[in-house]
Amino acid sequence: MTLLPRVDEYACCGHGDCAAIAPNVFRVDEIAVVTGTGPDDLILEAARACPAMAIEVVDADTGEPVDV
Image (cartoon, rainbow, N blue to C red; front, side, top):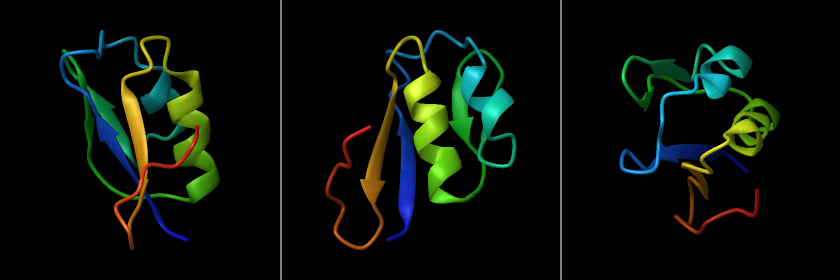
């Protein structure tokens, strides 16, 4: 399975935990943005680390949300 992260720009507070965990996937300016791809385990870890719970993870093939 390939996972894709999506950042809810209204929920993101720009803490930067996601970028610290997966710098090839996220960049944080005022808010986090997805800038690339990475291993599924890092995407999940970054989503779990978000204090604002602003990262949704979806299955790239189906578009279905994945439990974080």
